Image 1 (tube, rainbow, N blue to C red):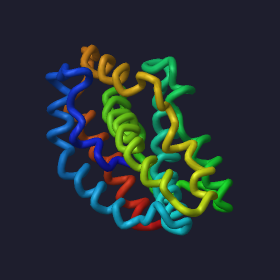
Image 2: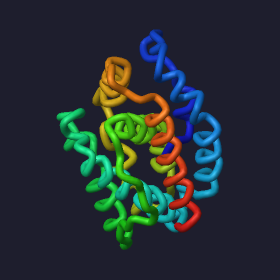
Image 3: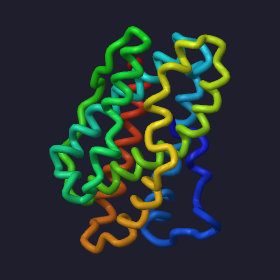
Length: 194
């Protein structure tokens, strides 16, 4: 899900200085720890890929529900395009499994929405790398369940998120960092339970 995304800091040769770097730096250890944990899933094997999707859904579903409850669509009118709960639920269904929430998520503030979105939108960058691994899997059922990993491909979701993040004037950076850290922790907990 997130592997490879921690090294991506520029887009078209342009860096995005400011709060984004502080957020990245404050969550770097949690990001690395989660990436290391997720490498234990063998994505080329059906059982490993299914467990990866179950773990991802275990955190994604409650995080997206918390975002909806906090009014994410007011901040991101394109939320229906960004949400991946339906995609991961469909992929798990194709693999004969169900998506289930595995963690509890605290209610989010406006700043917490930005911190949580930082983790979820950033995970798309890592998903591109994971999709390559999954594409090489011998079991064709794996290749038929990639809606989640391919979600948002070709769209400018990460870049438009960064624009919003840097333009947000009323953001409590500490709250956003705390929520981003909590989102990484949610994925770690779900991976432990999958």
